[in-house]
Amino acid sequence: KAGVTQTPRYLIKTRGQQVTLSCSPISGHRSVSWYQQTPGQGLQFLFEYFSETQRNKGNFPGRFSGRQFSNSRSEMNVSTLELGDSALYLCASSLTGENGNTIYFGEGSWLTVV
Amino acid sequence: GENVEQHPSTLSVQEGDSAVIKCTYSDSASNYFPWYKQELGKRPQLIIDIRSNVGEKKDQRIAVTLNKTAKHFSLHITETQPEDSAVYFCAAMGWRGSQGNLIFGKGTKLSVKP
Image (cartoon, rainbow over all chains, first blue to last red; front, top):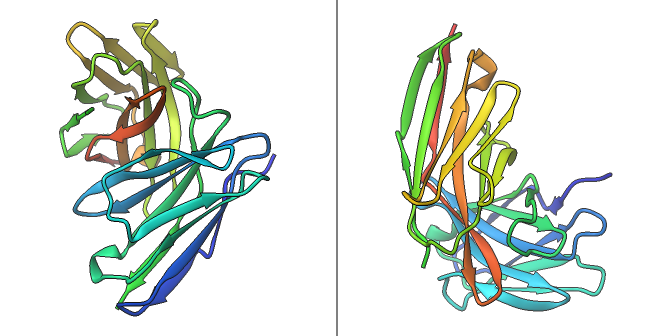
């Protein structure tokens, strides 16, 4: 069974640009969540999607957005990139996202903003 | 909202010794507590988890204990090996509405010296 797949793995963008990251969850998993990992702030929750609906959102500005498709694949978008957006963006999937569901992480997308 | 504190931030042990990492959480409604191991440049990998209806769980050299009254949980690694060297994160499932998201501790960098 394939794990959580994220693309692209590495990317470099310029300040002011926008970026879209993609995530394919484990087959059968309907909940997809996104996390940002930085050395200073650690692992922080961005948002969670289930059945194409955003159910939960962390404390990030509106420049961070996402969506989920009918096949549970998800994308996240960051507009007007800032240097501080440089981070590892991790996608995670679980069966339903309910309390107690095991959550599995993808390898992440390393974003560098210059 | 949920807040998770993790200690120590760094831990150095000799091969064969035990290692203990402790976490506290604030939201008494949280009832799922996973531990992740992250090696340099790789994804967080689930190593063990515990749900609130259980006080202790063991998997070979790894064990987790949970004290719901005191709101703390701990990871115990026995007979440590150099390959246990990594950053370990504890997390608690925090609630918003009926769905949850993981709130992570800041991580513990474990070094096992041969």
